[in-house]
Amino acid sequence: MSDSIVIIPTYNEKENIERIIRKVFSLSFPYHILVIDDGSPDGTADIVRGLQAVFNGSLHLEERRGKLGLGTAYIHGFNWCLERDYLYIFEMDADFSHNPDDLIRLRGACIEGADLAIGSRYIKGVNVVNWPMKRVLISYFASGYVRLITGTDIRDATAGFVCYKRKVLETIPLDKIKFVGYAFQIEMKFTTLKYGFKVVEVPIIFTDRTEGTSKMSTKIFREAFFGVIQMKVNSWFRKYNRP
Image (cartoon, rainbow, N blue to C red; front, side):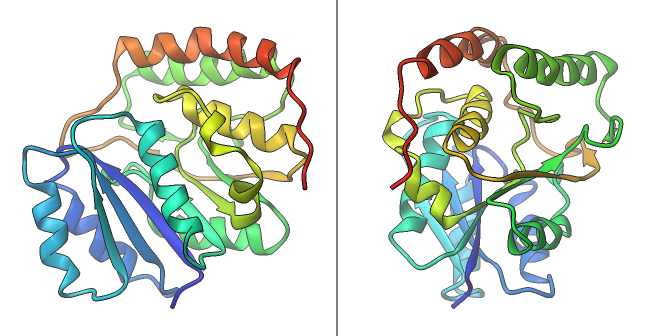
């Protein structure tokens, strides 16, 4: 039994899913993996099921009907993990934009005292490979916008490569996390800070996918832009008391 599990949400990732699973299982530390698949019509879940026979007990699959959103996928995964004994719970993309080797460093940051370790593209300059300049600028200035509105100092607020200690996810009322797109990542980090947990950013190099299709859309960006203001205002009327 591992104390660490990597949640990988998928929708049409047949080109990447087997490679990312095998890479994680090749690491020096024995991570488990939970794939949350939103009814991928390309057969992503079938590939995962086939690999479960190879990685018996370490590879888990939860299938949902339809594309329900990144945030709800992670909330589903968090609740699944909290029903079991995992101490370190990770988020990671399936497309190799996040280097699985960095899982070791994120876990290490939590062992050394962080409650949430963020794989940050912007803590040391801009560490992004193969992104169009427009996408880099949008992402970089979005994090600056989040800092301005929320008053936090997280350099990469939209990062989707993170490690939570179990106690963080046990404390946050996950049913009150409302956003489903990339604003979900912002809301989770903001809420973690509001509850007084220690957040550390670990520098990583982010490499854009070479296989499959990005899920970014105008709707997701709009939710993040306006959602930050809504989130900040709502926080004035909430109490963040840890048990």
